[in-house]
Structure formats: structure tokens, C-alpha cells
Figure 1: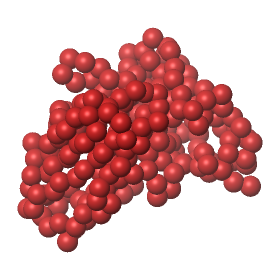
Figure 2: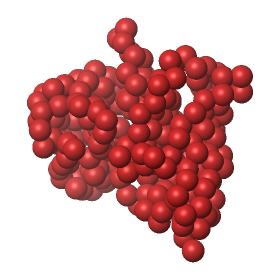
Figure 3: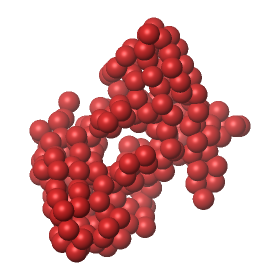
Figure 4: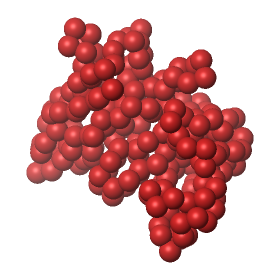
Amino acid sequence: EIVLTQSPATLSLSPGERATLSCRASQSVSSYLAWYQQKPGQPPRLLIYDASNRATGIPARFSGSGSGTDFTLTISSLEPEDFAVYFCQERGSWPPITFGQGTRLEIK
Amino acid sequence: EVQLVESGGGLIQPGGSLRLSCAASGFTVSSNYMNWVRQAPGKGLEWVSVIYSGGSTKYADSVKGRFTISRDNAKNTVSLQMNSLRAEDTAVYYCASGFCGGGTCYPVYFHHWGQGTLVTVSS
């Protein structure tokens, strides 16, 4: 089973700053990685699929990069509504499918 | 507008059974990949099962042999029959569709989600 490790666990930033979140896979998942945003009491929202493609309706300030084992989600300029928990998810050799443990993006 | 609404959660004793349902509107479940994903309280996400548009199914090892995903095309619903429940099955269970984008459909990128239904396995 592929293990996804996200870092940092918590990221404290201010609105307008740039956020860089990392997801590392225990073995290559090619580009088969997605990113989700989850706010309290809500289901996750798909942001990025296949490492670098924005899902429908996702603002351009969200971007994804990487391949193989190292991936990054970048939020170019944080808006107040971006403070949430972010998960990565792989489909490299499913089943199984695995998720990272999450990065909490909090207001500094 | 696509809506997925889960129901059927509740408190159940270990070893018991429960059936979850996911009712879809604005969306045809038989034409899409449909999944169940769960999230233990305060924890991360765990994929549980998928049913393809053609009817084939896949399961996580943690639920294989205990859970069964199915679909009722006439009612436009997806169900998850959960047997031999364990404490570690306690979670919010979400129904989630696969994602279609860029001309390709992906069974296990999760696009539309319901609000979830809580299953608590405890004596």
C-alpha cells in the first residue's frame, strides 16, 4: 500500500501570502495524484487532479505540480476562504486508494 | 444542480449490520462511477468502495467480504450494505461520484459529495 506523507502538518500564514503544501508518496504514483480542500462540517472539494489539472470551477490561484513521489499544491495569494484542511490522494496502483493525513492551513 | 444525500447511519452494536443509501438528483448514478469514502471523527479520509457504470465493484481490503456496494437504477440510488461491523468502522460515510474532466472520466477522483451520514459502532 502506498503511503502519502503531507507536510507541514500545520501551516500558519496571512491572507495575501503564498502557501506551499507538500505531499510525498512512498513509491511512484506517476502523475496520479489529487488535492482536496475540506472545511469544518463539509465534505472535501476536489481542487486538482492528475497532479496539475484544476477541477471544474477551481480558481486559478490554486496550482499543482510534481510527478513520481513528490508533489506540491500552491495557493498563490491566500484568500480568507482558503483556510482549511488540505488532503492529497493517489490512484497510482489502486485498489487501494490512499489519502494523506492532511495539512491544516490556519490564519496567522 | 447535482445533489447526493446519504441516509441510514446510526448507532449499531459490534457485529451488527447497517445499510446506507445515497440518493442522487440532477445526476444519473448508473452513468457514473459512484464511491463510498469514510472519515473517522477528527481523522483523515479512507476510500471504501466503488461501483462502475457497468456494474463492476472494488473494495478496500479493510471492508472486503463485509461490505457490499450496489445500485438501484430505477430509484437513482447507491447503497452500501455493511455487515459484521467493528468499532473501527465508526466514521462519517460519504457518497461521492467519480470525476470527468479533460475528456476523461476517473473512477476514483471524487467530485460530487454528499454531506455524509455518521455510523457509530459501539456497545
